[in-house]
Amino acid sequence: MNDLTQCVLTPEVPTKGFDPLGVGVHRASTIVFKDAAAYASRGERGHEGYSYGLYGTPTTRTLEAKLTSLENGFWSFLTPSGQSANALAVMPFLAAGDHILIADTAYPPMRDLAETDLRRLGVDIEFFDPQSPEDVAAKMRTSTKIVWCESPGSTTMEILDLPKIASIAHGYGALVGVDNTWATPLNFKPLEHGADIVTEALTKFVSGHSDVLMGSITIKDEALLKPIRSLIGRMGIGVSPDDASLVLRGFETLGVRLRHSERVGLDFARKIERHPLVQQVLHPALETFPGHALWKRDFLGSSGVFSIVFTQEASAHISAALDTLKVFAIGASWGGTRSLAAPMSIDGFRSATAWYGPDVILRLSIGLEDEEELWADVERLLADLDTRSQTSAQDASLAAVHKG
Ligand SMILES: *Cc1c(COP(=O)(O)O)cnc(C)c1O
Image (cartoon, rainbow, N blue to C red; front, side):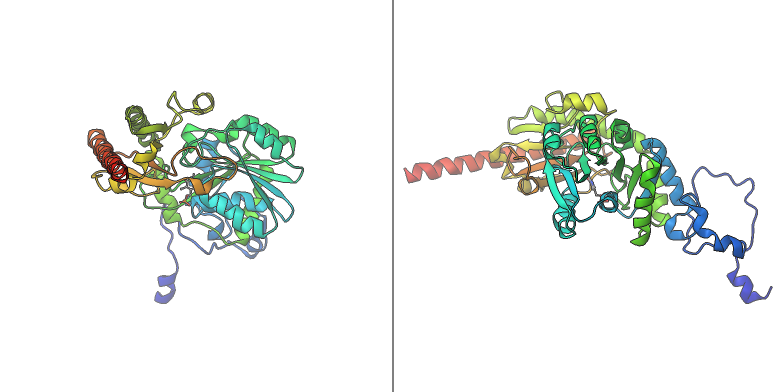
């Protein structure tokens, strides 16, 4: 073979005896076929075969297989982010005139997708009270195609009675989808509690290092495979093997990271709960949390993400007090090694229920730093909030005296 041809062709090298623990990064767009007949019949290779890099490589299939097994599903698809997984989990099943019911506490971009795109396409959208299966029953229609759940709810952590909601939805022939990002498949297995579809933002705890975006959709049975797979193909959506390899790397330590975050997070939640400026700590593993019994019945553990509802006076100072933090970083996309704090606004993202607390609450994600240093940071934040609240109360009473 001439040099120029040799430059292009890949020589065969032995792979026998090369048995690494990790999976290789298989980069490919083109897949070649051993003969013309294999090329002509490539469409018959199905979801398990390889025909084009966009539809899967051994690297992405390895990650899909790991998810399918942990979720106890039939098949998994990878998408470029958690939100794209949510969107692609519902889009194949909706047409003009159909109805979708969405938990009022769903991840806000999911609300936005419904209110903007699904509505524009003629889908009837409606939100339900996540704590009321009765509300789901009252809002079901014969045209309802999907009941979209997230448990616990984004930021405010409401636990859904998934088995009950699923049995109501299935009575109308509707599918049940669950965004399981908070729990990960280690702490909750929605397909075993009535869901038909489960999505994960692998971006968060599963990849675990705040350096990659990815989502997954796992389906319970084969009937759901074709609608999702073909829409993903028509939309030209796939993930890179390099990113999948990062997620696979993170996945190996998910168990220990999650257990650590769970332990430290719950300890902090219990201590924070006793502070006079705190109205409530929203953490499903706290015995005082309204959804605790359901969480205990269905979940296998908790994760290190929870929220703090401060008193009305203190909540006005959350943003200013964040600047006292030395170890926690200020940021939203949780589940990494670095602990995060983020003020979250709730009022604008509820329509079927009324949020009872102050609009802004504080969400914490517990990472892997030294827990005493982290706790010192929390104490600094609470002390700063205390000072600011007292100063503003004094100012207010002084102003009242001057007026009087
Ligand atoms: C972050 C998050 C998502 C979206 O994940 P991205 O990868 O950032 O798109 C979806 N659902 C929940 C519950 C999340 O917290």
